[in-house]
Image (cartoon, rainbow, N blue to C red; front, side, top):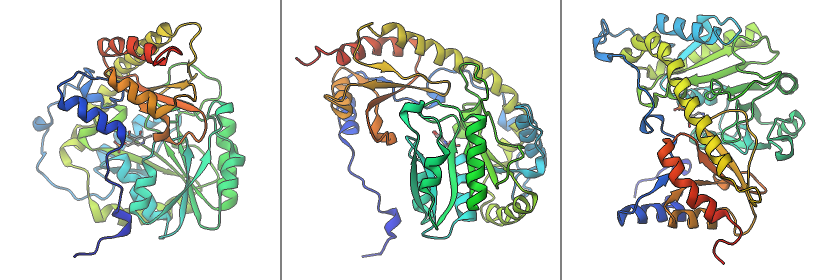
Length: 392
Ligand SMILES: Cc1ncc(COP(=O)(O)O)c(C=O)c1O
């Protein structure tokens, strides 16, 4: 028998929710899928770009950080968010997930750890494990609307902590980072010699105006090594094209050393395809059109959800400011999994809060991306199942 690494021994038994959804599918029963977060499956506008028609798509120039023109168009995109960004500090990768992997290689030795937000999307835990790096959670307190408490971040730091991950705005909480939170956090990072990794994939999807909101840390003068991550997957709704970016910032000596080392990491992969890099200016030009259509969709579905909630409901839509999801706080009984299973019997799929480690309270996570038809069809069963008399 061959030996395999322990870190690839992930549990494989499907959970009760995916089993129930698969059972429904096998019986040919319909499913209103409010767990759908793939932007290419919900009828949003694709770009009018012919990847094959670009000049020189088969010419290969091995550039570890990506083609200069593509890096320049990312720098221009980031600079439009407010702070001027230098293309020399922009690194292209195939996905944000790949960029996380590169940063974990850059910053951590096996057994080191990075701090991750809880609740949060459970991606970094998997990526860290694959790099033999550990994660330690810091809580985003529900009483503060899932805002960041730098004291809780600092309490999670130990001798092997190398970096703090912040997701701005949080997925699925939709809470944006604020200036005071950022400054307190950067101070913790600087005092402990930690890097700050800001995942900004949803930062272009703010639903409202907020004083003191941080949209991006790219180009900001902060006292710690800072990485800001995003990519076409969310910015233009094109996860299949495989192009993302990271911006390196912070004190010049640390930034330049990070870039020099990242060049070797990126050179080992040379992962971004030429056609997508050539098309990047046109794809980024399409991004505002996609974002506008997505925001209309998300705002409309959120409004439908709020309208469908009975005034005396035992559940609430948690206030949020952006992103692609709605968070519902539901009664402790019968709880997240039982409620999700009841909903599946009625043909509605949502995600339970425990996927995201809420660590208290009971929650459901609904994608706001489905078409108005699918979302509306799911609302009546949702309200029925969540009503106190359901199941009596
Ligand atoms: C917060 C967050 N970061 C990163 C990613 C992964 O992005 P990419 O498709 O660029 O790897 C996701 C995917 O859903 C996400 O929710």
